[in-house]
Image (cartoon, rainbow, N blue to C red; front, side):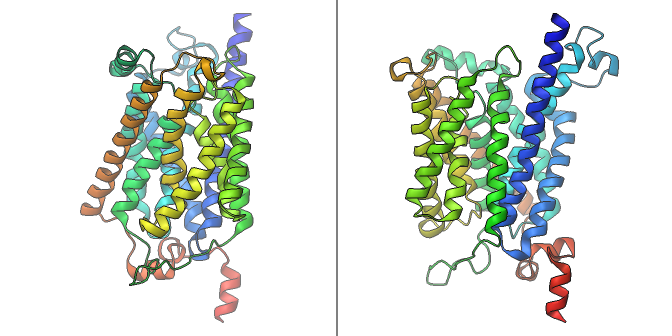
Length: 408
């Protein structure tokens, strides 16, 4: 029975890893559909290569930083024969699963800095983000490192609860992305001299929608499989994810006045926000959380672009940074037994953990991209940006035959 259980756990978390890996194609198509036509190839190449660099960084350094586990032992030991690692290579698939979370950090940031960022400096940033910056905070919250959770529990009566990463993954990615966007600056021609906004319409709404759908479906692996064992799996997590997705969609539909960009980002906002408390909320609490996040995304995206003049192309700070932070705090509200939740959470613990994560990520993101800006540079030349990242970096467009015919 023990052998069957350990084998089932390996298969369970492996399926979760595959579902979250598939989400990275969603990141790619969401960005591909949102950017202008001359930057579509770059969107696809960035997500693929960022994942490859993330894998190496997390394997060599990051996983050890977060959990104190090193893979520099023999294959027999890794597979569980030596008794140090779990049977059937469970630690290997757990690494794969958590890697897909870690690799979401540069995938999130990619959308914010699209259309004007240099390619190789971004890969350098990815290595640092996934090798050091993200796993340090991941280790504090999920790895029991440095007594962080003990401190939070001692101060506020409960540890910081983030079941599937509203703060650990999404808020950290979104706030680090804000730092990157601020260091990079706005796209050429985005704002008129008088301050007015110049419309840069999405290149492909169907691809944008495809990306949103892939992310939404994969999110059920992201959330449900965060249980990490078959024994711990909960249908409540699936139901809450579904309700938050629906709430975010409908709120964005109304607040965004039928705009398809908002409609397809609405479910993502809801799913970002529900990650933290998906295992402790009542479904109605998850619905309210998702709806709040969908409305927050629409408002914050408009504020960024129109009022604050922060040219965050895909709205990664509103979507992941703000909705992730909102979800971390909402867990401390709708997770309470008094509001139909499972209990075991503290509002003040959630506020404290969320603030620490957001501030840490903003400082690290601005510091990392600021350092790269001063050394190797992070922005394409004006000529490269005008021609587009596809030609400037990859020497080919998304539609080479069509473009060649038109130019001829």
